[in-house]
Image 1 (tube, rainbow over the protein chains, first blue to last red):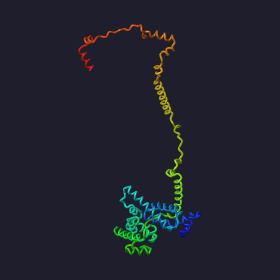
Image 2 (image 1 turned 60 degrees about the horizontal axis):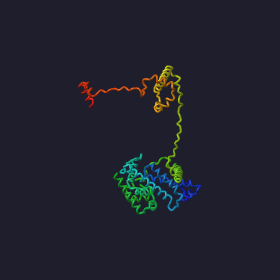
Image 3 (image 1 turned 120 degrees about the vertical axis):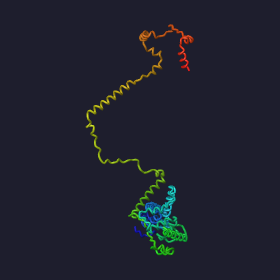
Image 4 (image 1 turned 30 degrees about the horizontal axis):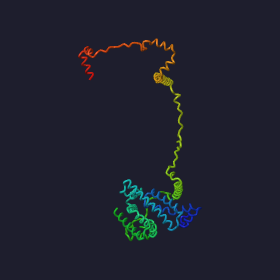
Length: 183
Length: 186
């Protein structure tokens, strides 16, 4: 199926019993990379990202039947991915508390554990700096900086006003700059 | 420096620092990951559908592992050789083994035969009058003749013995014997 088909055509194919599989595959192929990176920037590890992404895409399959296009398809998929990612992070934090390891920087440590990690490179320091932010602020920064998402779309996705998102983004950028300069 | 002009200008307005940073992700994705993901997800959707169906019908079954208890025999890499050692067994050893077995059997026989016991309870609980009735008169008469002296009849006189008095006994005993008697009594 042509990956450049618009969302409406893909959804129409999905809702047609004969082309349901093709419609779904088209949607997955169109958005899988964006969703993957959206999740991976938060979870760092490929294995965790893969688990969460598969869960997200299964939920997309189950939810597409009732998707009524009140919001854009990719905004809806991003929302599912965001919720699943935040749920995963919460579980990881609880597990760290149970194992009396709550003081450790779980995701900062995961960045450092990457086989290609090089603290002398700015792109790796940037990842460490992003991981030092609260999760919601990380989301805002990633969506704007990497996904280049307009504020109005982010507002729809995160149920937050554009002004608050803009302030959050600017605040995050300042903190990242300070982190990298002092590293 | 960010590729997107809007994002770049926005960051540059915050700090010139951002012009020095590249907006690339340093993480690596495994080869062919995105090619295989859609089919993996479809398979997962089917698995989930089976799980959810069972959850509605009989949720208990979802808690039981799906492995069966059956085992497939492990294939033998080589055929085990037939044990031919019995053919090579020397006769003297066989004779010695037979002798040992014979001694063990005989010993067991004698040991168990000596330990034969009789059930006396039948005789203890039996009625003597009934037993006597089963014995012939001639047998009884010959027994009585042979053991005449042991049979006590009411007419036979019982020999009376006179017990020695304490005083006589004390007079007959030495002082040493009396002392020993008193010590042993205490």
